[in-house]
Each structure stands twice: as structure tokens, then as C-alpha cells.
Image (tube, rainbow, N blue to C red; front, side, top):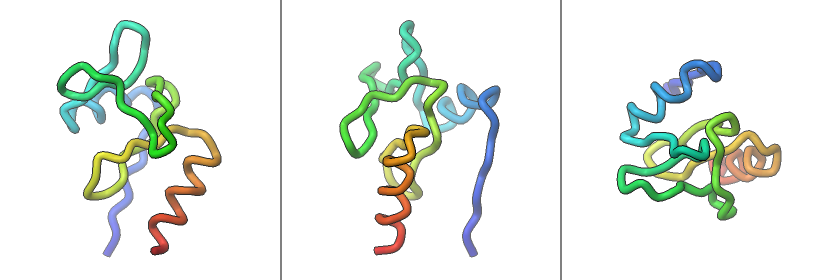
Length: 77
């Protein structure tokens, strides 16, 4: 059984804190060391672009269509 968690933008910081992540002064998602996290394509993610974290990983997803398509492709493997 797969569990899907859906949230709106108002819950973004709470979700990030749940993964021990945060947002820097410029609005980018950061890890526990204060480093900006990136998508699998190497793009830094702004808080308002945050779309999720892949199950069992630290692969971050932004709301870019290409990133989401690549996520679906990885899930099918």
C-alpha cells in the first residue's frame, strides 16, 4: 500500500522541518548544514517551488514539469 501526503504551500516550512530542513534568508530550501538542496538535475529549490522528497531518499523535487516527469520515470524502474 502506498501512502501519499498532499499539502498546500502554507504547510511547506512545517514539512521541511519534519525532514530536518529549512529555508534560508533568500527563500531557498536548505539541509541541516545550511547548504541549499538541489533537484536531481542540480537546480536549487525555492520554498514556493518545493514539491516533495522522494520516498526513502534525499532527492528533492521542485514544481517544474520536467523534474516531476523524471520522478515518475524513476519510480517506474
